[in-house]
Image (cartoon, rainbow over the protein chains, first blue to last red):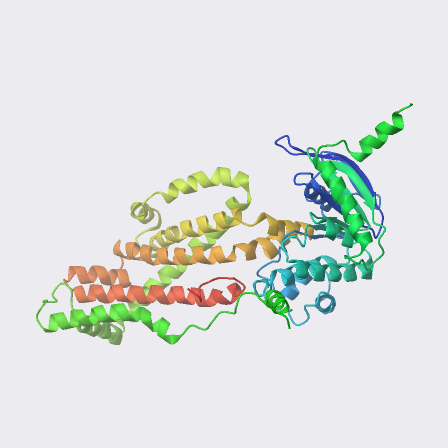
Length: 260
Length: 276
């Protein structure tokens, strides 16, 4: 279980990026964070990754507080962030240096097949297209079998066809070990395609505005009326969040307190 | 396959083309201008358009070079010069790399060391000569020290700037994989600065060859710099030009060797050098 307990982050210049974010993510759940620019999605992801420290509150993974990067947490960034001086295979095996070369090579070879890059092991990152590079980044994050996978808009720079193909690859890989996934995206369609739950965030300061359980079974048909309906509902919530309406949680609390 | 399918395939499988082998004609083109100028000067002296006394024609310089080479004198001078450059380059590059890494990586060290080193950098090289002779004597140590000073600063600046300029995003990947300080330095920082470090070493090597001239002019009994002074004192411009050509050849060979040795470790770079 991943839990955020009244998580807040204020930067040194006084900018409050997150305010009292509280949410639980079940093991194996895919949670998507959507919201306008500056709503603290990436800040939240960096806190979970242990790359930054919260100003208040805490993050618990299976009861242990996350205060620094952990071996059981994988991260896929917006850009592939491959090491240009390492081959594709060496990039994928970067986090496996504690294993014997035999074990490492086996895992890397398997990961290459899983992301559809078999035969590309000796190539340099510069020799790959953007989509291929992002597949290497996905393989690098998943080859260590993390319990928690964090993704910061990993498909945003890709064309629609490549993005759809990578969604398939990602879901197939997720299905093998079922890590908990927290992903940030601007793309509502992507959130509905991948996530079990979609959290809408509101900016200034970043906070949770609304949350939706995704009722659609996998594989999801993007052209189905149910998919469209889910998208519309989230888009409406996003619109409301950007019009600076009071957060859903706050409204619910206020409503609960009315006696008449 | 539809046009859309073709475009998608090209996008997925695409990527920069592999580097093209350099055509021999392109490599030889670099010799065209100096050879042309040499021929023109030879013809000008032969036909009496110029007397060639202060600027001897290529045939005279060639004969001098041949004479120096066949007598073994050129090898003696070239070996002495190369030894000095190698020793000075080794010391200067090692010190420049170490201090550049320290000041680049540690803000506290940068605050303490960098202002002093920048002030020392502003001192003209010749100003060190009397001090080095006093401290280290007239023989090899002072010459090597002067060359090391010349090599030190470009290497120091290059390494420090390269470390400060390392992409934060790449370092974050190292942090995500929980690399310790040493592992981060070995697996991320060092490879990341490698191209800049090699460029700095090449600059340092070039300056090493400049400083060896100053070092050998200040008092030496052998070396190409000594040959320059000897040519001047004997009124032999052909000897001076022969020494200059030898410097050029040695410098170019040393640089070429450095490039050749380091080329394999930079094969990953996505550069346009083969397309320009």
